[in-house]
Length: 452
Image (cartoon, rainbow, N blue to C red; front, side):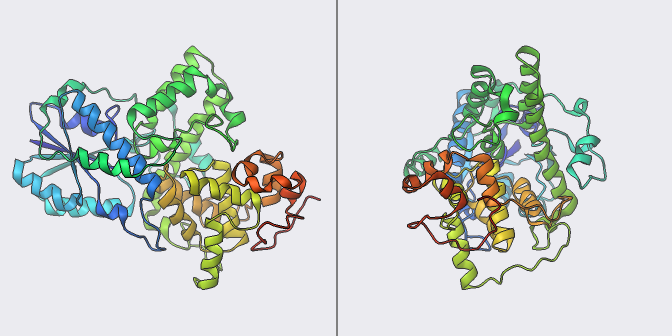
C-alpha cells in the first residue's frame, strides 16, 4: 500500500508527479486530503487563515477533485484533522510502505512535513517538485537576488513537459472514509456571488476561454494593468494558488498558442509573469524565515508606527476602504467584496500602507493571506517585502503616488465609481484629485498631489 497526500496547493490530476509515482507498480493507494483545523484559526494579527473566499474556492477545488477521481472508480479520502496526526494512523492501519507528496518551501508547511517524517521514521517519504515552471535542479545553486538576473540565469529548454498519468489506474485506490457530503454542506453555507469557481475543470475552462475562444493572450501585455472585468488579465492566479493547474501546463499551452495562433510580446509576457512566481518560490528557499520577519530578507530596519490603538484604527480604515482616497478605497472594497484585486491595485494599496501610513507591512501581508483567493505564500510575502523596501527590489525608494496612479490607470473613474457609486455626483477630476468631496471620508494621511 502507498499513500498519496494531496495538499491544498496541488488539487489536480494533470501534471502531478506524486500522483503518477504513487501508482507505479502493483500497489494499492490510499489518497488523502486534509481540511486542517488550522485553516480556521487566527494568525498573528488576528486574521483568520482562510476567510470565506479562500475557503469556498478550496472546497470547490476539493469537490471537483473528488468527482474526477470518482469518475475513474477511485476515491479521495477527506479528513478534518491535521495530516501529521492522521497519516501515521493510516500508515499503521494499512501497512503503508511509502508516502508521496509535492514539495513545499516555507516554514509552516515544512514543519508539518518534519513532524510527519518523525512520526513515520521507518516509512519511505518521496516528494516531487511540481509547483513551479523550473525544477529546482535546473536553476543556479546560488539563486540571484535580482529578478532580472534570475530571468537571465534560466533556460527555457529546461522546462519539462507536463507529466501524463493514466487515470484508469485510480481504480486501485482505497476507501477509508467518505466525507464528501460534509464538504458539500460547508459549500452550501458559503452562499454568495463570486466570479471565480475552484477546481481543475474550471482552470482548464478559463485557459481555453482566455487563449483559444477569445484569443485574449494576444493582447495580454497591453491589457494586464486593467482594473475592471474578467478579461483584462488571465485570472489564472487562483487556479495556480490551489494547484488546479500547473505552471508547466500553462507554459505548454502558451507554446501551443504561439504555434497555432500568434507569437508576440504578450505571449512572452505571460511566461514572464509565471517566472516571477518561480522567482519568489525559489527566494523562499534561499532566505527561509527572513521572508516573514519585519526586517525582511534585507535585514533592513525601518521605523514603523507602533502597534497600538491608533495604528489599528488606521489599519481598519485601510482594510475597509475608508482612507479618504477613492482610488485606494475602491481597490480595498473590491478585495473585501470579492477576495480578488488586480496586480496594479495591489501595488498601490501596499505602497499606501507602508510608505504613506508607515504601518508594519506584515499586517497587510497577513490580511492578503486571509482574504485573497489566489494567495500564494512565497509570492505574497515576497511582493510585500518588495513593496516595503525590505526585499530584493534594487530601488529602496520605490513609491506609488495615489494621485498619479489614479490618473494613469483610472482617469475616467470607471473603476472607482463601480465600487463607490455614491461619488457619481462629483466631478471626476475632483475625485482623482481628492478635492471638494464634501460628503466623503476625510483623508487619514496627507499626500502631496502632483496634479492640479
